[in-house]
Length: 253
Image 1 (cartoon, helix red, strand yellow):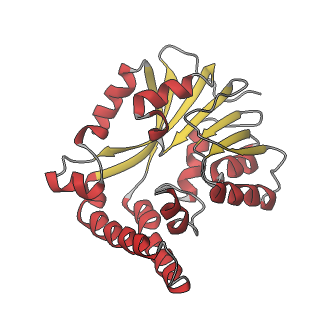
Image 2 (spheres, helix red, strand yellow):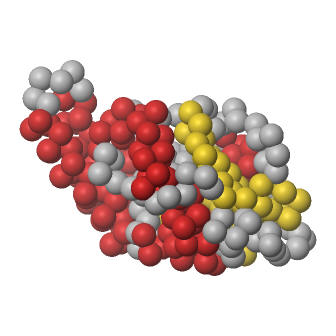
């Protein structure tokens, strides 16, 4: 599955249904500033760390399984002249143990690293400073889907909750929701639909590649499930969370 995403998202910088504007807005509402130290688990191509280093003066470290995505992250850091502010390493983010504590710990769209939301929260807590901010990118149900949607989308009903149900899950884990930035239909379209073009061009350029059947199936299933169910029933957002009762200062001067 990782290989399919490396191909389908080859032209993406942000590997989630977020626009550049929303990514920068997330940094603003998270009070990221000079000196803010960020750990990004399953960082993908490192766009968040790189852009926030440019815009807000933060520093950060990213961990990801994909050597393809990390190569793009290193290139982006060099392109934006922030290689001295951000670093990346290849590895399983679910097994990563940070040598220190970070002001912000992020996991955007990859709570599978902890076998779900609850396990991922515990992983993130272990790397967060006492008053640290957790940024969790997570899908949520915008309406109750029909039974056929679960199989088409590849999710079980309890994998995600409604927005209020997601809040309940955060509070049960001892976290307070302090901010959020949600994707909208247009940012979902740009993330998903643009992959179809990328895959088509890849298939044209690689007609004998062994991944061709899997990529055709991936694109066909993506089109149908997205138009039939994803766009109507599945939302996505990044939720800014603090340990209940902790002080509110994401930035370190």
